[in-house]
Image (cartoon, rainbow, N blue to C red; front, side, top):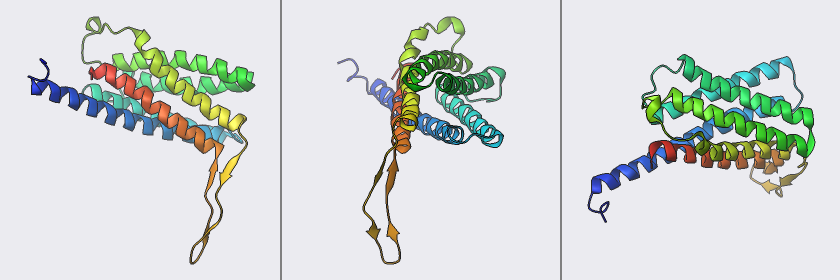
Length: 217
């Protein structure tokens, strides 16, 4: 009842929720594009050119995602400050180690171990990102690191979906030809596209969890 009598408090809560959902959607789009493009470049026939291009895309995406987090929870400031740059580097390294471990072990075992490794990397990376963009002194930030495990797990499971669709799902859904006046259209949905969609959904849920906690929405 006290909240209903204070419309200002209710308005602030609603505003924080809207900001959190918008930021989570933005971060998920950035992460999906960065990880998806990087994964698509390096999972097939790999060369020095594709590896470097994928690394550049992944790092720029990590830096941009860190910027989204910073702009949402604090003043963005200089994104290239050492701690903020370190958050982007940690995220980039996490995905690279994840793929390396998965490929070295292979099969379901590789996916399982790599997912567990990525959960650890992402948990630490989220903590680094939170400290890099904190609005309060370190002594005032009493939120345990354990609260970051759930979003890290959701994002890592999304990565596992990407690997599973490439390694184990050799299928595609093809629509009947649709004849138009000047051409014929065929819609083809491959397993990897489904994997990217699952990754995007889990990335959104992961970031929504993060922003919900940090904004207190």
